[in-house]
Structures are given as C-alpha cells and as structure tokens.
Length: 115
Length: 111
Image (tube, rainbow over the protein chains, first blue to last red):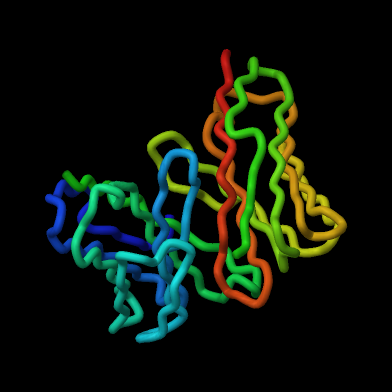
C-alpha cells in the first residue's frame, strides 16, 4: 500500500466546533485529494491540491477549507462542523495529474461523527 | 457539472454467476478508471482505459470503454466470494482536472 496516513482515524465532535483532518504521505506525490463517502453518493471530491500551496475546489467544497504548506501534508478543515458533515473522509494521492492517466492511491479513511 | 452514474446500485448474485456494472457520464471522458472497495476498506485501483472502444481483461474481469468515451462497463465472469465489494468508475470530463467518481455498485455474492 502507498505510504498514506490519515489522522485521526475516528473522531466524534460537537456541532459548531472546528475539526482538522490530516493526510500525510511519504511518496512525494504532487497531487493530493480529499473525498467524502456517504451512502448513495459514492465518493465526492471536496478539494484537491496539485502542488504546495496550489489547491482547487471539488464537487462539495462548501464548509471545507484545505491547506498544503508541505508536499507531504494536506489538511482538511471543517471551520464549524455540522451534522451533514458526518461522513467517512478519504485522502488520496497521485504522482501525475488525472489527465495523464494517473492512478490514485487512497488512505485508510477517517470516520467523523458530528453530534 | 460533470456527473457519473452507475447502475445497478446493488447486485446480489449466486457464486458462479456473471455480473456487470455500467458507468455513464454526462460528459465525454478523457479516460476512465475502475476501483474496488471491500466492505470497511478503502478504494483500490483496478485498471484504466484511455482509448475509445478499448477493452481490457484482468483474469475474470473485462473492462470496456465506449466508442463515444461517455460510458464504460465492468463484467465479472463466474463470480467468487472474493469479488464482494463496491465497484466504482471514475473519470475526468471537460477541461477540469477533477477526478469524479461514479455512485458505485455494491456486489454481494452468495456461496
């Protein structure tokens, strides 16, 4: 498996609190992604990064922000968590852009529950 | 925006039966990828198709990319219990670099 570590793996938080999920990679891949997975919706792209300090919005970016200050770390922040953000969050990495036919590798996932 | 739909959402088969899942995009795709996610696990890359009409095989799995590059299929011959999981297609359409996943097909295989 690719060297991807997500933390925390499980978290329960209260509505209105800020939450940060961390994705750390040891593969030196340029591209990093955050997806959320919910029943009936499959995997939906939240944000992605194509280099240090270079990020772009995905399909469901409202309520989320990201930062990438180093190649190896991609942070996903929920500024004020809501119950609708209860989900499984997957980080993924790739060494080339999606148009180059890049295979992406997923982390183990972070289970977030907002109560 | 780009949408990728998969059918069926769920399929239950007896071991040994064949299985097919279909992926349809609202836009022309530059390439399409397929992933498998075991229950409780994370998605794992299976294959990528790039050319119009392309067909690729991996043992009992056959992948096709449509001539118009807007649809794709995954066919499993003689399913086994190890095939259980959710199968996702993913593709990029238009001018974006966003890899959009389909809604997935959950395959259950009864021994």
